[in-house]
Length: 137
Image 1: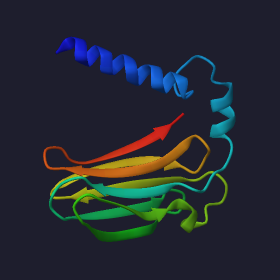
Image 2 (image 1 turned 45 degrees about the horizontal axis):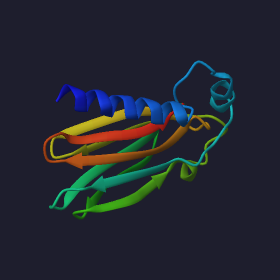
Image 3 (image 1 turned 60 degrees about the vertical axis):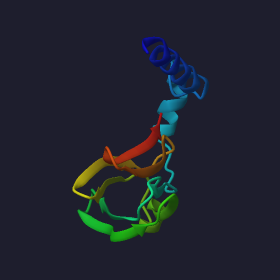
Image 4 (image 1 turned 90 degrees about the vertical axis):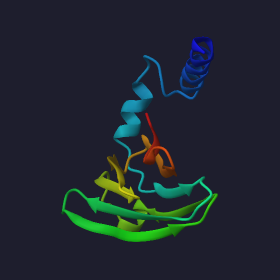
């Protein structure tokens, strides 16, 4: 059992390192954090066998404005893009708070509109509720 976890951890670490997400050379990351990129999709994913309602709220931090607040019904085995931060027409690099709730479970994060951030996937599971999965450099 421990060998399987070790092999999985080693594989993930090597994958991240190979993709440039882990390592000591941060020169590329510094530039990415200073380069605006408004295109960040927010997807909802339901790998379960029952439909789920997910409430997604996106708030612009600088003005405290809610730019997206809707409840979406996600069918079994469905993934859907429900919002993109470019819809808020960000002025350069801006910070947004994202919150997703379903079945009494909530997860949230703060994201920025720069090249360091990737897309965000809100994934629901019967055992863990909702969790946000994202990539950042």
